[in-house]
Length: 147
Length: 141
Image (cartoon, rainbow over all chains, first blue to last red; front, side, top):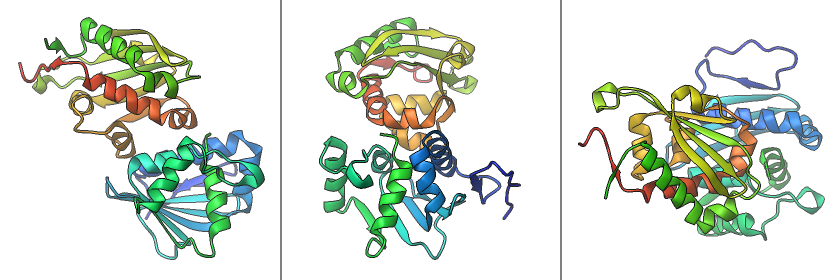
């Protein structure tokens, strides 16, 4: 497994020499978000967690290893994950469109929020490891959010 | 009556479909960038030269959609590239554009990623609009 050489300014690193399109997209999204929004940078700098995302309709996933101000993106699901999110592609992208409301909590009462909550209720969005990691999930959602 | 794929007439009908869509109008509110689609050549599919679709989209409406060269499309603010086969799959609902991008079958080569993610619903509806245009595909004629 080849690691790309890390430069001091690099916040996102790809563990695989050929990151998947999904890994590149998520890594790129987080890098752009963190780089352009100071409040996201603060969340990013404080987050230490391993988050898996599995896209059920393309059978592909990534593991995001947040290391307090640095992120390593792995192709596929790696062990020792704190949280694993499993959903279809459209739902995964919709997670990025959750608005962030009062006290930094994701908003589940607008159109996008209701759609995401509905998928959760119907089992179309599954979050493993939620118990005990709710704060981590909220932080990850804030980092992802483009809304 | 079916229209030649990626022709001027196709572009006009695609534009009309977008402008008829209330879903697009609402989902694309605030969008103000030009989007270029590069359709890469596949000579063995009777699509010998790459083409570009240049879309002038503004605040929930399609102001203009033109067929040009691949370079015309690459000059836009957002550029999405795929082979003829991939775009045909999108237009025939065999491939969801979001999934296609996550799988690398379609590539976002230029443009701010958070912005395009913010408008996922609009891009999904735009894909729906392409499926409403009856098309004569060059590899089927």
